[in-house]
Image 1 (cartoon, rainbow, N blue to C red):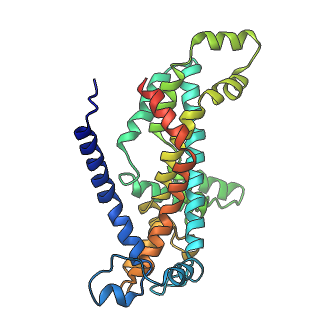
Image 2: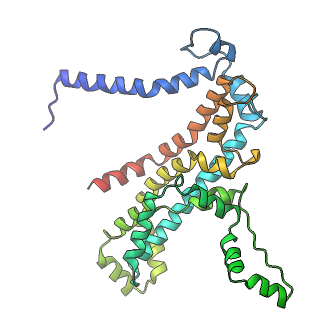
Image 3: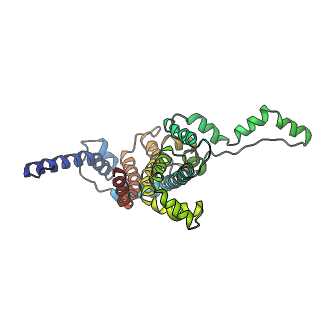
Length: 311
């Protein structure tokens, strides 16, 4: 039972307002800092009201690049982050959906073992397997080359046919290298599997009686039913991909592939110069916009998925 008294209502609103102020104050400080010249930020008390260089600072960061390192515009960094985030989101959704579909609707030996092997990878985040993953990305065919060398097949081919086998496929400094190694998601596979198990068997039988094959059942029935789950996962996975720092820092060694999160770190830790806080804060504010837009666009479906999950 919920009591609706004026005092409780006032306390609830007071707590809500205090929470909003505490949450938004760092964002306000970042926005204010992005509208001032650097002299105002380092010479006196920190201003709490916006300055008069909003257009100058943001246009410089967006189209010219920061003054602390290189001249890489924020538009380039945000485009790289967008490609990476969208690629990771789409890749994780496709791989997880197909994996869960195969586990739930196909009868093959050891399917539960395969599911638990996928589930165990939850305990192995990118930071833990960073070294072997980087080794694979540096040469995707490296394991096959090592196998040929171990079995001496490469020497046999060279002696018999005169073919020198040197398998090499490097993904460093490519968009594929940024996206492919992290498109597998045990969490998304688990959530899709749990949802598929709630789909009534009668629906599957009805589709089979109507002559629908597995692909038709998946695309015409299961995919529309998963709309809210896909929307909720899209929000989470997009933010995950957008905020990636360690992986693009290792794989994208060329400035043309610099992502916006790594760019913020470069602005703050500029070599042989003081941090340009006003430009760094402008880039930070810009970096927050795409995830906010995605959340606002998919908010209704995201909340619906959470409510349905609670039920």
